[in-house]
Length: 228
Image (cartoon, rainbow, N blue to C red; front, side, top):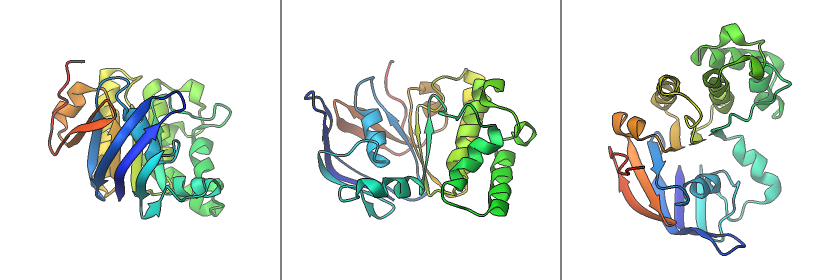
C-alpha cells in the first residue's frame, strides 16, 4: 500500500528531514508515527501525499510511483487518499454538508451520489443533525469529525493523519480515536503522526519511531516510548 525505499528529503537550508528511510505499510494496517519534535515525522507524512517531494529514493502509494508523478497528476493521487490535519482546514464559508460534498464535487460525482455518500459519512461521525451548521458554530471536536468525514467520503484506501488530536481535549481525543478505529476496522489503512502517549499506549498498534530523520524503531503492538 505504501512503500518507501531509501528515501531522503533535504531542504534548501541544508536540513535533512529524512535520511535514507525504507518502510513498507500494508493494506489495512494502523500505524502510529512518533518521535521528538523536529525528528522528521511531519516530513515523513507529507512525503506520502506529495506535499513534499523526496530528494532521492522511491515512494509508492497504492501502486503510484511518486518520484515520477507529474505535478499536474498530484490532485489525482490525493483523491485516492484521505488527509486529516491538526487544524481541520475546513472552508469557513461552507456549511458542514458543503465542506464534505466539495471533495466529491471536484471529481464531478453525480449529485444524488454526493448526497448519499455525504449523509452516510455524517451518520458515521455522528453529525447528521449539524449538516447545515458552519465551522465557526462547531466545537473543535466537531470540526475534526467533519474533517474526518471529508477525508473518507471518497472511500480512500489510506487515511493519513497529522496530529489529528493535537488541538483537542482528552475526552474529545478519545472520541476521535474511536472513529479512526472504526474506519480502520472497515479496511482502510491509517497512518497517524501523534504526540499523544496515552492513546498510543492504550490502543496498541504498529509504532514507527523517527529520530534525526531515521527510523529507530518499528514495532507491532509497540508503546510510545518517549518521556515527552
